[in-house]
Amino acid sequence: MKVVNENILNKWYKHWRWQTSNLNVLHHNKLQFNRKDIEKVHLFLNDFFGLDYFEPTMLDKMSVDSFNPVISALIHKMPSSNFRIFEIINAIEFSKKWAPQHFNQMANTKNDTERFFPYLFESEIKTLLRHNGFLIKKEKKDEIQKYDAVMAHGSQKFIIECKKLYSNKYLFFESIWNNIFAMLNKINRQKYGVSVYGYFDIDERNPGKSAHNQKKNFNRFSNDLSNCRNPKQKYECDNEALYIFPFNTMEYNILKIEDKHTCLFCLELKEEFYTNNLNRYHAEIKFKASSDIRELNNKMKRTIRRAIEQHKKSSHLPMMIFIDNEKNISPILPLFNSKEDVDVRWIEEKIEKSSRDIIICLYFRSYDKYMFPKKEMIVFGPDKFKNLCNKLEMMNLNSSYKIN
Image 1 (cartoon, helix red, strand yellow):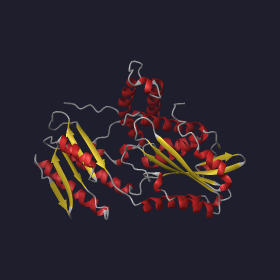
Image 2: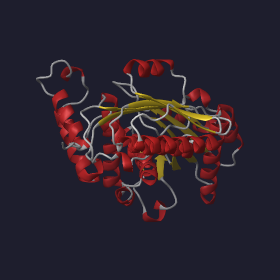
Image 3: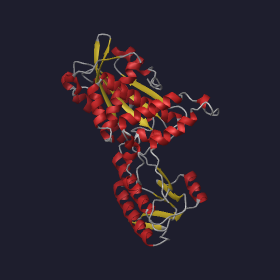
Image 4: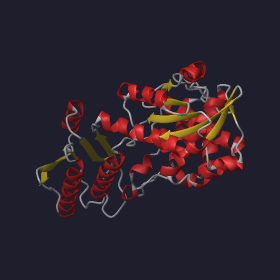
């Protein structure tokens, strides 16, 4: 038996070609994009990233970086995910036309998630400002290394600094997810084709030690599974327990509804099992964790202070700091879960006491709903720029929904 691993981009394309077909009367008239948009997306992504970029990742090579915003948007076939792709494409096209040096930086780092998406966010902000009538100065060689962008408003120039922030526990999440992927890969390579589900909890008081203990539990379970058809149901290291059971749909769904555990996962064999061959499994991982709001705000504060320090030699120019808080269906979590978590008083005091004029823009956007993304730009600034702050806050944040 040969398992066909279909290219993610091509699979997405086939799905949306049918969804946007005139023959598909149930969906066609409800969508905000058409067949031509889908064809342009397929062509552009293939041209910029290359088709190999969208090849499915096998479990033995899976990591958190495998779920970047582009791949996540293609896998989760929702209209809101398509709008995210439209924004990405328009941002790349903006840089290609107006900021060739920046475009080259994106092209050279497209396979490096940690570097590419901060570059992309810079381009997204410049695209958004330009679509809303603000003047973004054309890229100059002597300014490329100094500033993310320069904006003119009336006779005043502004330095623009863009920061894409993730959860303060990003490294911890990365470690846990990668351990889970490694365990599922060992299950996938088992001799007997056993479908399993399981769960474990992380001690929030000492998450690093807790994660290390669970890794030991994963390894013990994986070793048992490679030697026998029926491994133990509980593995324990320093009171950190991993529970594993033969897959049962009803039991698994009850645990999903109860939502009690840090991590709940399953690996279910979908076809007849073949020894010494690739086999197709359905995998689910549900992971949750809490963060101290003070730690989240401290990360934001450090980011703002560093941005100001970075440009202290040009303190005569007012500065705009855009902070991204993007939420999509992936293991990569945004810094803040909601705007209510932000220490607004600190931001207002920082702006008031600063020796230079600062405008701080917090961009909250969520692509985890089915039909439309939810977006909001929250802007803080000195009274002298009140009108400008109001314009920034009232921007049309959905202006990139159509392919140019």
